Length: 158
Image (tube, rainbow, N blue to C red; front, side, top):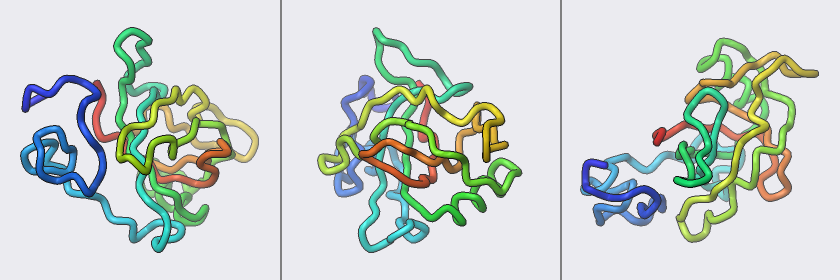
């Protein structure tokens, strides 16, 4: 990394904006904190920052850990379909798949870890959307810890 920071010691909390290990700090990642305006419930929804593997974008490595840093936000199915329309050319809110608990470590601002093996990648019932290799889009997560439609964006690939 530019600041000489090793993998997995950065913080992803939008409240942390002053250190070289903070993603949302000018001295760190230099990324602006994302808005919650398009959330399903802007009064209570928050961004989750999970790591894992998405087919076609990096690969899972058990020795070195995660390969993708995702930002995900809960939203309605209608907004989900429109995001996929604009980002991927198909106005579809995908069928539910267990993509892991995006909310695992949200309170601390640290990174949740899961393998996203069930990423929508084939034409299945009610889903004709292929998100393999897509760095932005919307998925439908059936995991009990974070159920619903989620906008996602890949922040970086290791």
